[in-house]
Structures are given as C-alpha cells and as structure tokens.
Image (cartoon, rainbow, N blue to C red; front, side):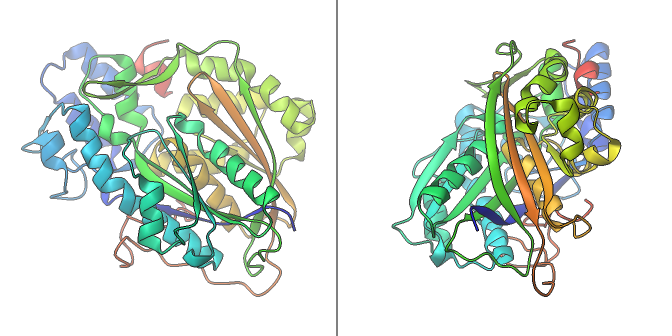
Length: 413
C-alpha cells in the first residue's frame, strides 16, 4: 500500500473577522495619517480575502466578547501593543485546544483511534512553550505516552511539508506506524498598528487556524471507504535571492514579519525552475500531467505570480484562492486546508495526481506530490463540524472542505 494520508482535519477559532470591518478598525487607530490610511485600504481591499478567524476578540469581529480582547484592545476601539510575553501566554492558552480540535477531526475522518497513534509531529512558528502542544496532544487525546514526538518550529508558512515529509519517512521506515501531524498557527497574536507597509500587509493577510493529518503505512489498513492521498516525493529549494525579503524574528512586542514586495516577483521568476524537477524536469510539459494543484496562498500576488509562472488555469488555482478568501493566510496550516478540499472532491478521478507548493522564509520553496486514491467501498457521510467541546455548527473545528515594491498595495495584489 505504501504511505498515505488517510484524512485531514481542521479547526479555526470562534472570532470571525470580516475584512472590511477589520480594515476600518486599523485605519481608525491613533497615529494613522492619510498616507498610512491609504496603504491600509489598499492592503485590505486588494488582498482577495473576505474573512479570517482569530483568537483575539475586539478587532471588530462578528463576535461580541471574546477572551483575550483585554490583552489586545481597549474598549474595542484601541489596539494595544502587548509584550511578546503577553502574546505568548495567549498562544499557550489557545493553541492546545485548537490543535486538539483539528486532531480529533482528523482521527474521526480517518476512522483511527488515538490509541493507535505511534508518533506525533507538530509544526508552528507563532508561539513557544514546553512541554508544548505535542505533549499536550498526547495527554488530551489519550495517545499512548510511548508515542514519539517531534516538533518543527519557526519554519514559517512552508512547515507543513517538512512535517509531512518527516511523517512519511517514519511510516516508510516503520511499517504499521500511525503518525498524527498537527500544524497550528495563531498569526493574529503578532498584529500591531504600524505605518510600516510590511506590517500593514501582515495585518491584512494573516489569520489563525489549525490542521491535522493522519499518515500511515502498510500494514496499517487505510479506511478504504474514503479517499486517501498516496504520498509521493518531496523536494526543497532555495531561490537565488530573498533571504532579506521574507523573514520572521522575535521582537519585544511580538514576532516581526518582513514580507517585501520582492517576494512575489522572486517566486514568479523562479517557480518554473524550482517546480521543474518535481514534474520530471520540464515544468512547461509536466504541468499538463497534474490533475490538482495546492499552492500556498501567501497572498493574492503570490498566487498570481505562480499562476503566470507555471501557466496554470483559473480552475487549477480555485482551491488555493477560495481558502485565501475564506481564511486568509494561516501560515503552515493553510496548505492542509487546501489538500483537505482535494481529498473531499469526489469529482476527481481515481489516481488523480496532486502537486503542492509552499513558500517559507529564505525564500524556501517546498514541493510535494500526491496521488488521490478514490474510495473502494460505500461512501461514508461527511463528518459534521465540531468544536473543542463537541458542539456542532461552531466555527472552531469547522471542516474546511466546504466552499469554502514595499508598498502595501503592491504586495496585497
């Protein structure tokens, strides 16, 4: 059978941010002059994002009183600038239940018990503590305490593929392993009011979310009543430049993202040469052999440049654009939201080929190939949306498979 992704689960926090209202919140902050207001408007309006989710209340969300709002806002109108320590305390409180919600969703979809899990791999770049989410997942879910744990930290938006790659190598070398992979990012913890175009873009595009995957190998039987993803090859490449254009550092008042307008230009210029080896050495010819694309939506302009650089159709970009529109950029969790939609698409033929692209600090480009293997037996009804407490219809834990220059305007486009 080989190594497969049996299922993917997702979860988002309860505070739903409408992009237009969040734009107005940032534009109304003290010290925002006319130029900054225009940059905020351009970044938010040209982001191709309608909604995002956050563990922070008070950002003019659809929810009224949300925990953590007192840390970040005063009177729902003023954005505070909490210290890195204060922000990380919120991460420590909110990341574990969100991770557990996504993990439970994945386990239920896969038909796998927590007691079957032999390894846990976690990835995150938006907070730190120890014992961390990997440890708490074992305790919370009832995973055997003998399960081996690996945490991949601070690899940014591209970290899901190194996490899956680690899981696949475990599965390949230890047949019968069941690996729980969880990517959880609380990007909104590091927002701030700023005149810096790069910080404005970060405030306009990043959101919070968690996604989990169940990876297993023979003789662990896949649940053949549902489609799975056969795991193929992974690759890593560094672009010729970009080290100073995308980075993620720890400051006194949160983690600081540098994301210049050169990022989409570099990606657009080099994506064909990077993707070529994954496609058999010829990007122009290999693109036609791919049935579905999962491209990390670092922003609208990144998707535009990838589409142009590889000559992809609008249909090929649809899942990436819809996840961006509905959730924003959730860093490492985002690509799994897209892959979940590919898994859920019963219109895809058996044996459909899937190509994935992620972009991280450096600039690092991670690629992966999968094959979607259709269900062999009766169709299993879709798992209902669940939250941390098990209620239905609440945003946290909601399944994502449903339809879901240095100027701010340049980067947001």
